[in-house]
Length: 417
Image (cartoon, rainbow, N blue to C red; front, side, top):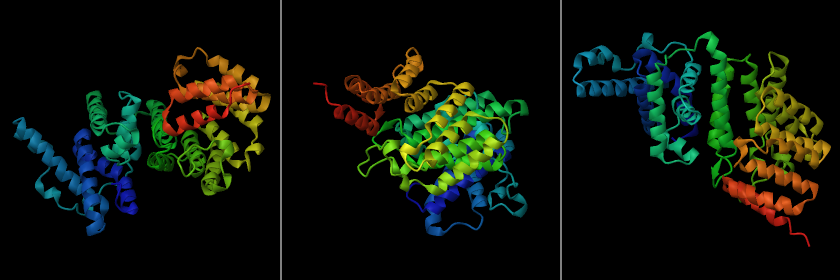
């Protein structure tokens, strides 16, 4: 769907979860229904630019997807010689004309139900991400594979296994029980956060950012926020994405090289996104329990509201990281906390905080630990140690723009006389 009119592409992605929801409600068979919806989306991507968008796009997609699904069910049943079962599974041919007025899908938004299903606890995080992007985001397997830089066959197998796991687990197309909903929502938000992070800073490859992934994460999070407007963590996550993505165009130079936050042209930041993000996080912090996405959004807001890097309110950021470390401790929080502490109390204090991560196996081979250590050593004036740490970080990262940036930082630190 990448080369078509942007308006049609947006429309198809918006319709994807609603069409899939309508099919699963009518026929069951989530795995087969999802394949049929993909076929319908591809058919629309080919036909609509030439023929025009139908008066009722959703009904068109449901009709085409229904035909594909029932053809598939008939074929499978025939192969298994269970024609009588196929007759029970499949509605009559009369239902495959455009749905009449009373056949229109109910005024139900299935986005949240589908997100819960795609983030089922039986799935690994990579499978949750892939299935969410395909079933809820309407991306093709090719687009998802390209974004994550894996072969299309590998991504296709991952998605197929995910759908089979959901089927085996007996997952129902319904919202989880009330007692499980908060935990399942956390899993949904984590998946959306992973999608955004991969889009904002790609973990591998020649490009620093995959703009399409970040935009899709924001779009899906907006939908969840529309459905759960009073949930503080949903609001916090949307705010965090907007406040972070607002800096996107300033993060790279024309040659694709990375520009660190302190050196970015703040005039090119997206002011509308910043204003919306600040409004959202301010509202979230006023209501309900404090959560990690709200705190991260507050930190991003402090950065974004500083007119220049030297104006950053680092003591406030340190205080926010202390809160974040209490409610959601993890090594990445400690890394960022160390940088903030260094800006307030000096690089030695930041390095001392880094030492608490020395034995953390989660960071043993991660480039960020050495990159932060190098930055703080450089601040402390230890050029030789900083240069070695920058080089080690460059060896560990699989992102080419980050690798070039770290190697350049090492090269600029000349050896002592």
